Image 1: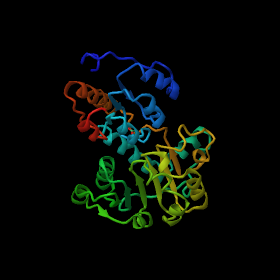
Image 2 (image 1 turned 90 degrees about the vertical axis):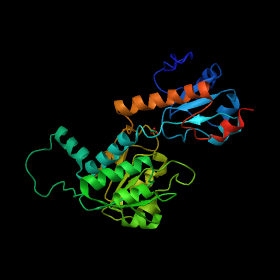
Image 3 (image 1 turned 30 degrees about the vertical axis):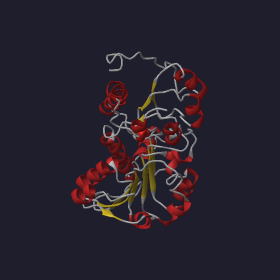
Image 4 (image 1 turned 90 degrees about the horizontal axis):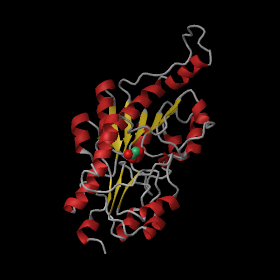
Length: 313
Ligand code: GLV
């Protein structure tokens, strides 16, 4: 798409993310950047690369980008919403079922040669039908998760969000509750929020201690939203029953992390948007945002649209 639109493309061919000095050096040679979530685009980056016309982030999340610093130097930042909502909600939904039936752990028992006989009282999970799903962050992905859980298990949906989501209320009978009610009433609490100053480390010891001892914590948004040491402690002490994570803190998770040995825990290596459909959609949107900027001075998925109005200084 980019070359068809007449742009010359310089592609990073290295295995793994660039270091910030490498990124800055390359970015100085180009006019636009198609970035990944692992690229650290902070104040220092924008001081060095204030010449950039536009950044097309290949992700819906953009917590790796200092939007204020980008706006100060007049650079529009775009992301790739919608196309990955189904894929990411599927991972949250899958983790919920996997945790409720200890699937990842039971799989490992076969590999370890521990499947010897039928044991009626061993490794029991629990049923999800009719349970209460709490959604923290009822945006596009949270809405799909609500749909999955309502349709499959007739779960009662409660949610907490910056603003009311009338679609979720009308379609799935979702009930807006305070954060305290959310953590106290949820049987499954699924996080679909952004990582921001307000949400960083929000799910900590104090919050876990107020959740039901029978509850499951699911996080498919950003690992920074939960405190991992506190989560491990909460699971060990039985403050909550289980956890399913597609995002960890830090990423990648170390192979000796105690969470990986816990029966009621399922961890995935940040694969929320990893379907052919979602990744193709993300590529199309990220490239399209850049092309649209050059062809029409419009950016369909712009995070800081005010810079488009004021123009680059
Ligand atoms: C993935 O984590 C994304 O933000 O798109």
